[in-house]
Amino acid sequence: QVHLVESGGGLVQAGGSLKLSCTASGINFRLYTMTWHRQAPGRPRELVATISGGGSTNYTDIVKGRFTISRNNVWNRVNLQMNSLTPEDTAVYYCNTKHRGSDYWGRGAQVTVSS
Image (spheres, rainbow, N blue to C red):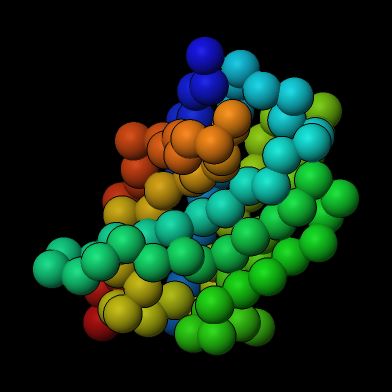
């Protein structure tokens, strides 16, 4: 059974940094593309960053240059380093992967950026 658990959310002032982590189980982690999404109140969930099994990365334009996605295939972990945070980055952040055609999500980590 696929299981994703996020950690590392919290409250930070604008301009600050946070690092999120997501630990995966139930999959051969190194083979899977992992993604981070976020959902702000009243808004649809949006893709933030993607990392392939081989380590190739992609970012949505609004986080390019500020966020970095990385993975540790020994610890089955995907990280999201977030720098230069703004109040517009406030959201619940979710880890995601696809397994056998189905989407799997963690429970989410709240990130709140104060102005």
